[in-house]
Length: 76
Image 1 (cartoon, rainbow, N blue to C red):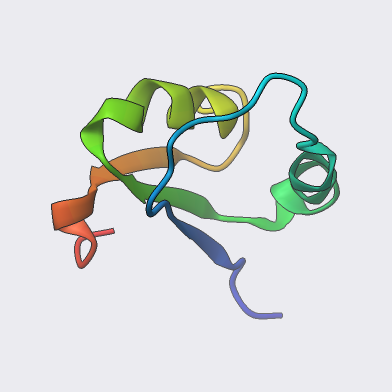
Image 2: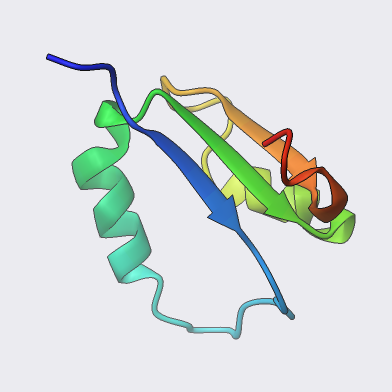
């Protein structure tokens, strides 16, 4: 078998979540496939770093989660 896939999340034009927004599909994906991912990189504006890492479960999942400012997309 090959190596585990990596996940790259690119956040563009994001203004935030609405109260009561349905995030069920995102959570279902992470519950079903989260253990199969070797690492996660999130690229977004720096103001979203704390929320993005929290939403991705940084520190609570096996795969490391790292944030990159939009200007560092190539490094991600």
